[in-house]
Length: 129
Image (cartoon, rainbow, N blue to C red):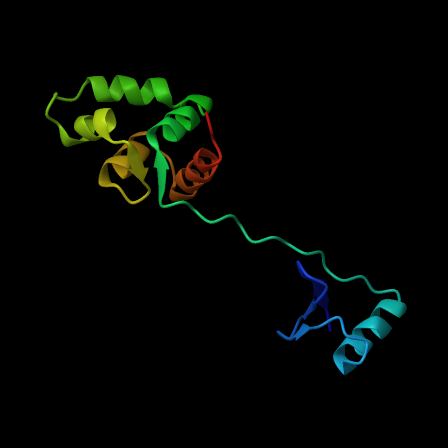
């Protein structure tokens, strides 16, 4: 049997049980005995942060600049016709949606994976002016 620490004082058991830190609980007593034998539980692993559905234009631009992508995107956008929907979105959107076709087209142009775009959105959500 293996155990893993949780965010709280409860302990996660490898068979799926969550054991409350209650000295009267039989499973918790077994866990304490397991510890007394010199065993160590696996550490708590925080879940990944949620991927925001939207970020502001400023947040997106800041992260693109920090990642070295902004000049490439600006150069690409400048090649598009004034009425191209991608250009209009780039120049006028106040919020950027993760599922936007324009955003996904720009990500493809930059050869970014979905995971990389998700990471950029997470980073952007933490930017403030």
